[in-house]
Each structure stands twice: as C-alpha cells, then as structure tokens.
Image (tube, rainbow, N blue to C red; front, side):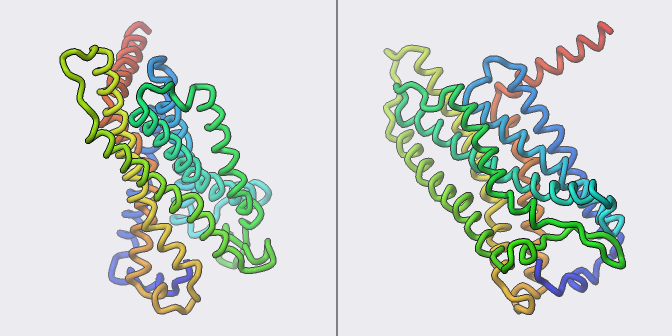
Length: 326
C-alpha cells in the first residue's frame, strides 16, 4: 500500500497488543478455514447423493479457499513476528512467488464457481422441466477450466514477485516495473477487478433478480401435484438459499477491499487520500473482511444446508465407531 502514515496510525495502541490481536485474528481464520473447508470437501467426496454439480462447485470453492490459510497466513504471521521473510535462497524465492500467487488464485476460482453455481440455480428455477444445463462431466470440465484461467490471469505475479535483501532482512516484494518495463500494474489490477469481480457481480445480480421474480410469480402446486414435484421444489429453494448467501457474503467481503485497492493503485504516493490514517485503517479492515471470506463459506454451508449437516453427523458417527473398535 502506498500510504506513508502506517507507522503512526496506530501509535496510540500498544504495539504488542496490536501484534497479539493480528495473530489471534489470522490464526482464527487459519483454523476455521482449514477445518471448515476440509470438512466440506470430505462431505461431498464421501456422500454419493451430494455429488451433484452445485455441490461439486461448492467443493471446488472450498479447495480454493484452502490456499489462503495454507500459503498466505503462515507467511504473514512469520513476517509479523520475525520482522522479515524467514527463508532465503532458491526455496525462499519459490515460496515468495507462490504464497501470493496461490492465495490470489483462490478468489478467481471462487468467483468463477459462483457464476457457475448461479447459472445452475437459474436453470433449475426458471426452466425447471429442462434437463440440467451443467451435467456432472461438464461440471468437472468447468472446474478444471476455472483453475487454468485463474493461473493464466495471475501468472504475471510469478515473474514480478521477488525476494529482496535489505539491511534489516529479506522482503517478498512485487517488482512490477522492473519485471515488465513500465508501471502497468494499476491497469492490470483494474482489468482483473472489472472482468472477474464487477462484471460477474452485475451478472449475478441480474440472474438472482430474475430467479426471485420467477419464484414470486410461480404457481404453487396444489393437492393434485405429485409429492416428487413438491420435494424437488423444496430442494431447489434450499439450494438457492445457500447459494444466495454464499454469493452475497462473497461480494460484501471482497468489493470494499477491491475498491480500496484500485484507489491505492492509481493514487500518487503523496496523495492526501491514501496517506490519511482513516484510509489506512479502513484498508486494513477491508483486507481482513476479504480474506475472512474463506472461513465464512463453510459455516454458511453447514448452517443453511441440512444435507451437509446430516452427512457431517454420519461421518462423525463412523469415525467414532471406528475409534471404539480399535
């Protein structure tokens, strides 16, 4: 971040207390995200009835959400307590490039999964009698494609991120101008934000608006309707509720951070806006909001989807029974 005020913005707070607070917050994100997302992946993998496109896409999001606690949080905690990057040499260079590349990969895979989830729900609600638009095989293709696209988009980070040695220690820095001969990073960041966040956001708002209108104007099945149709409609509503919550929370968490990051990228280092303590504090709040999203998603799934909760209970029961037998 370009701000020069960061050294004095928290001068009234005890540095040790600030460090402890940061450590607790990041550790909480680390533990909740690791446990929660691992459970979601395990639940979908172990439960054949849940291996439907929407659940496979949610599992894909969970896998991508594991990248942040595995690669970013430990490096951030180590740097906070050691004051510099701990590992040097070839391994240090590789980890420097991978820790930001893979953690940023998470958000791009997630947004692509959210778009596919919304399209799946749109077809299920608006055209209920049509065969599913996203079949299981096609879903697997989209999952692989989402990772390839995300890696291609973020590949410049693998070139621009480098480990730099200073008198006070090593730093992992984004040397964009040196790598690409020009200050094109703001344009690159803005293009990524527009294509992969703001346009999908508008698209999802439109699709969910159509879905809600369709649900309000839908003729409810009467006594003559088959039970199977009523159950199908109930399953669609439950899946829609969970998908909507995940989408809404994702954008609440990410849009403020992206907007601040765009302002920071296009502002001069001595800009009064970004050099203010208010902007710096707000930037840090939105930063935690964005990266806390990886810990919130599995909680939403377990709270709003009874099938996930029941599958989790079965897994716990099986593990407990195995433990007793051994």
